[in-house]
Image (cartoon, rainbow, N blue to C red; front, side, top):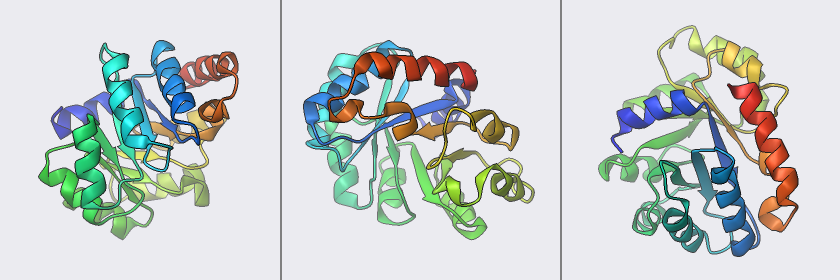
Length: 208
């Protein structure tokens, strides 16, 4: 998917799930449950057990228009292995090699940034959007301030986004939100998938 199309997809879906787990099988079940419940953007963090295998299996099993991404991509090697596993989008915690490699490979990338300088550098490097991380440090008020000089910058807050705060993030100018444990809970460690489904319904409701 071209990076510009991915930015539009973020705007359409408004919610991306982040899966990080100690069990590869539980992580895969979590990804597929998220997709079944209507989450079309799912990031598998590379610090998940057998992350590349989980990505490859999820890509094969998910079908439809679900897009499986790779997160915590820091190095060029991470990027190339994620690409080979079938990841269709990339998330980094920081600027650097992972961002540049993704742009070089024409893979959409959410580039991790916190300060205005980092956010501007991320977009100048070719990122599809800025991953505002950790978003909890400044909250929606910080995003609102960041958007003052950069009103057209696509920003996706990650880290500290829960169901109650989702409307505040969108009111502050978020393009979409990325959510890990408040949504996924312990599912990727073998937790209850019915509880996961209930959380998905809640998040989809507040993100609509």
